Image 1 (cartoon, rainbow, N blue to C red):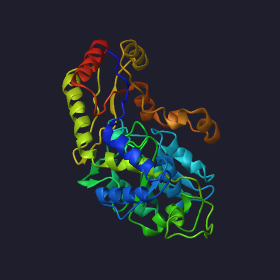
Image 2: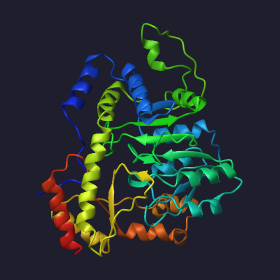
Image 3: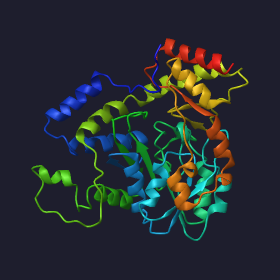
Image 4: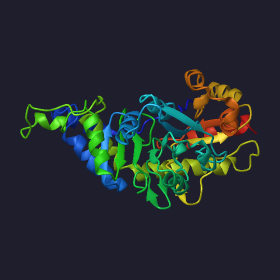
Length: 375
């Protein structure tokens, strides 16, 4: 049996929606993009939603909206995809890395305050695997030190914290989602920024398309005009109506797709619970995970990955910590010893397949192979 690490959920609904968008004549950002933004903010509960072509773009625009400057510092967990730190460097600002919790793999709130200096401007918590971070504690720290909070929610749709959907926590400045091919809502490529700050939303809309002073797509409708002004040094980060059409279909399925992933997670948990060689994912009681990832911790991780590959089971590792990558290690002189928990977690972490269209027999096969190799 061959089981990929991920298989994107795509049906005739998504295909027909994309086809309709193409036939409409709008193949770039247009009315479907606007409709997707409205449906997304209504689903999340936020006042604003700004669509872009990736979560990286959303994070970049969020930092621009809060006014990040050269030599400013932004605190990010070292256990994340490189984009979280990368966007900070776009401003010639400094990503300050924080260690993580061993059980959740999220940023260790108890270690944040020691990293704050007079140059610190923001904190970017990352909701690892879909489990929300300790947001109330993060807000308290941010308030004491007058810092902005930008959530990296690339894994976190639909996740909730104390009964509130991620993307609608009122004390966050901006929340950034990913619609990449492997994500829980996938448009192939894409992203969204939600906020309850109208000024931030306006800034991000202007800067997602070259700093043009108005919604550029509207200039080409019957209501539009040829004249525009560049009011900021923007980027080319807009999404397309094709992606938005797919996104609207996927958005309607989010609760159903999450339930399917949660069921697989429960099946894994039941199968591995008595295996003393496997540490299961841990989710805190006051939050709900999207189950974007199912990450166990084992010994001899690298050997097990190779053996699973030979047996047809795709798996992955989330993540290689930022401080271990040569570019960041050399440029910012991160010391490996400063992140003992992230190092230990990285050495043992293994992400197993978990996606809505996994068949019961595929889940059973993964369990059988993992149990045999880590028995």
